[in-house]
Length: 191
Image 1: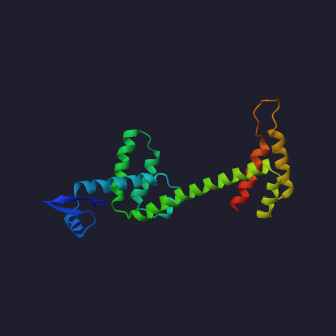
Image 2 (image 1 turned 90 degrees about the vertical axis):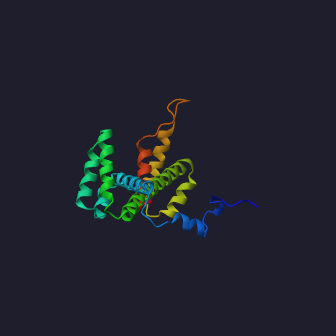
Image 3 (image 1 turned 135 degrees about the vertical axis):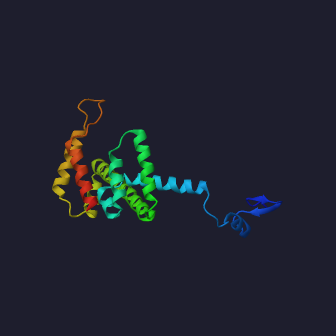
C-alpha cells in the first residue's frame, strides 16, 4: 500500500488534504508576504495581457479611466526598463479592479484566434483536396451548394495548370489562382 503524501508536525503524521492539514494551513491570519507577492505578480501578468486585447474588447471591459490610459501608454512604450516599470504600475492599478472579466476577455480573444487557426487549416485542407482529387469537388458542392461552381472549377483548373513545373525537376509554383482558390474556400467556411 502506497503511503499518502503528507508531513510531520510535532511527531504526528499529517496527510495532505486531511482536516488537520486544512486546519494547520488555514490559520486565518493576514496573508503572508509570499501570497501577496504571488497575487501581485498574477495581477501584473493579467495587466500585461490587457495590452494584447483588441480595442473593441478593451472598450467592452469598462475599465477605470486611469487604468485604460495606462494600458494605452503601455502599448506605446518600447524601452525594456520603462516597460517593466510601467507593467508594475498597471499591476498596482489592477488591484482595484475585478480580475475575472478581464481574464474572461483575454481567454475569449485567445480562443477566437485558435478558432481562426482551425478555420485556416480547414481551408488549406480543402484547397489541397480540391487540387488533388476531382471527387473532392462533388463533396465540396454537397456541403457548400451556394458556391459559384463555374468560378470554383476555373480556379481549380488554373491552379493545377500553374502548379505544373516549367522544366523537369523544378519545384511546383503556386500562382494567383492558388491564392484566390484559398480565399474563396475561406470565405465559404466563415459564412
